[in-house]
Length: 384
Image (cartoon, rainbow, N blue to C red; front, side, top):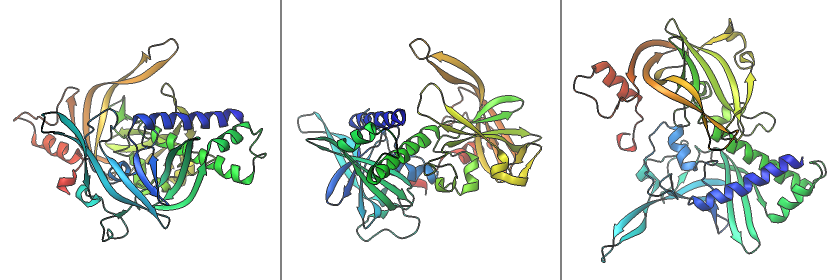
């Protein structure tokens, strides 16, 4: 119990430290202006909008203090989460010829942000019904940090808990979960939920494995191009049975695929979790628990997968992290292959060298390769 509580407290401290370095979003709640953590463990809810809609991020970071390139202003009204404003940092030249930092304000519709279930309000605010997860907010006071956690499902706040320094201390000093008061049990469970959410999105960036032409390769599936497994779940993380709300068994899916005889098969699946930069906590899933009688000879016909995907060919190496006993696993790309699938059937493929630049194609480039590259690119807000 103490070990788990210590880890949760470290996560809290690290999150606040990183949020100090990264300019946070803003959340208006009950006439308070809270800072919304947007570090590596918490993607901004606005970033998840573009990820889930498969749209290229329209923002460019101007500084290391704000890699995501924007500050979103949110508000909770009657348990609903709204996006009110998008602030973009920029620099202008003042009358003295000096660069001056400014924030320019935009309405959400100017960046193509729309709710799924209703039209935008008359004042331009957008109901954030695309967002599900945990909002980890904080407010500075003389006594230190005061944390505000909001558990959100499709834009609706289903739970809210405030945790101050005394709460953290009481939880840490408790000999067991059962010894906690009901109030502290709820706060502890919110911390677990938040830890799950951080871990889930951290591991969602890992690429799937795929065997292609008898080589161990990688399928590009970072969080902006979700693993093909999510098509079965309508690209909705809440439909994935091991999402952050599953406090007993949570993890991002890591899939193993095979292309054989021009057919795509799912051959294995693991849950990825943990927050180490040097290793990943894994748990193997039995395909039969998810696919029942669709598992034939140990594999699943991936006939739900259509579209253009990118395969990285190459090999793994272990590289030193800079101090004894710690290593990074690095996949060294030697070539890329664009593939087009229709209901799991491979109908087209093009392999290009690792230094190939899809944005600067030679005039003699094959028309089929040009088309598959265009189909692979994410649409921009200007093209929607």
